[in-house]
Length: 242
Image 1: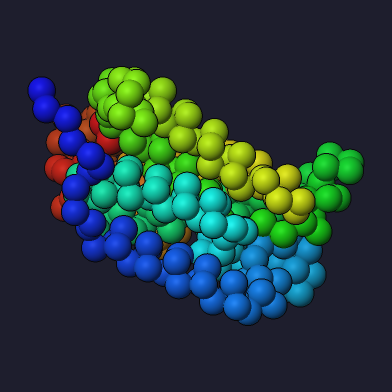
Image 2 (image 1 turned 180 degrees about the vertical axis):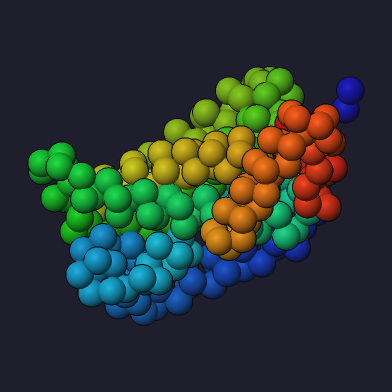
């Protein structure tokens, strides 16, 4: 079987995410004052009502190596996932894992963990690593035994390569003095990605999702009594996770 470099041409969502991240990196390089209002600081989210920070923080990066590793992982794993899922589902998954990772950071900072929570509450977290970890998890779930050439020398299963790339992204994201509190975001991206994929297609609208789950529950009850086929939304036949 022949070898190939990378996943192929850029897909639409990955292309625009790369552009957005690089553009914001250049903007903050010349206007570093934007990091404070756009980065994720739990104290600012809660105390100053900067509710946009769990979304904007993932478009900021600390240095060239930070953005390089994150964007490399986005390209390598995101392109194939977008082809598999489609642009809409991929963009939604990326947003949910990134924002979810940010919210996990805020929640952990409120836990009674002593000095750890106190430092996390005032620390600034930036980077796309939360969403990237969500992509790494998804790729490992879909292609756990696929083999690739690492550094063009070592042939390793994707699940091992994902662990290595994830570790590099983690070390890169905590390389600066204020990055030590980013662990919750990475773990949050993994957790949110796992829950989201394992629970099926989750709507972005909580009320609509609750209504849908309630309807499914009622249908299943009727099915037990009358052996009625359990249907659902039109896209149920194209479930991405079984």
